[in-house]
Length: 403
Ligand code: CS2
Ligand code: MG
Image (cartoon, rainbow, N blue to C red; front, side):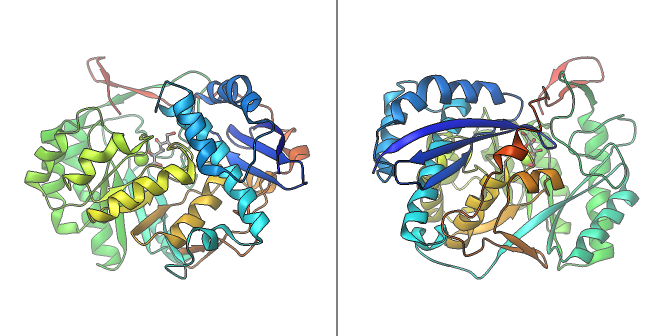
């Protein structure tokens, strides 16, 4: 069996999404997500100029060997662009293998470890009351876990919070990076009230999550973790930027609030220390940005030894293909924690018909052979690429800040 051809499809049915389609000489094809938010075209070039020519003629069933060939062969290891490109190949090949086996992907990985996959939804509001209203809507839809983010008085725009009531926030929403104002002091003084309000209305059973988007210093993160302990968060995410990982030792000394990190990680070496020193509780690396199923499996298995669970990134900038593959993985992995879910636009769901289904706060991946997600190329062609970037943060005095 041979890879006959491969191509990259870029579409923007709501936001830019990049897909790799690999076709075999026996009619079976597979698809993988290659989307890297705000840097989409760099992965397109990596695939078209440097990977696709090397794939033609290879046996698509040799997934591990192709993974090693692309990873080691590049010489330039790790990093988001290369690892996203490798992930797209890897997921397309797992899709092909599962189709050839006539099995849904979770069966090929080792079968079900659970009946259904718990997801968390996003409730955002410009103030606490409007955020509570969004939590109510999620609870009514059956969500058992909700990430809560609210606007901060005195700060005009806050990343992670929708600009319009009742609408989901979009991570990359401007043709050039927007500049937001940030104040850690105002945020720290305000945000605990949000969790108090959610607990007081919804009781202890609802899982509450929160994303700091890398905006605090280690000691500020320690303060936040400590102050919110009475509200029993499921996790506090990305409380500091990731470059200085020993920050997490400091934070851990001060708080029992569970910590999640890793949506920007691409390899086991990015999180090995954090995991083996038990400085985090959930690892958020995704299939799409961390080298595919082949590589995320190595990360997740390593994490299991140290009681770290998975909590895959699942924002709208990961395509339905990533969501489909993740749900199969989540169904199988023993140390599953939770899966993020941000609904895609209707147009996106039509471009990517899929077998996965939501019911009462949980997803099931479906029983279709492969990862169960397809692409309607004709429809995809109707939505051309549009430049869209994530914002940057500046402190009130103009200093460029992490987020
Ligand atoms: C967020 C995302 O989903 C999350 O947890 O952090 O909005 C993230 O910032 C974007 O997906 C980045 O592309
Ligand atoms: Mg996040």
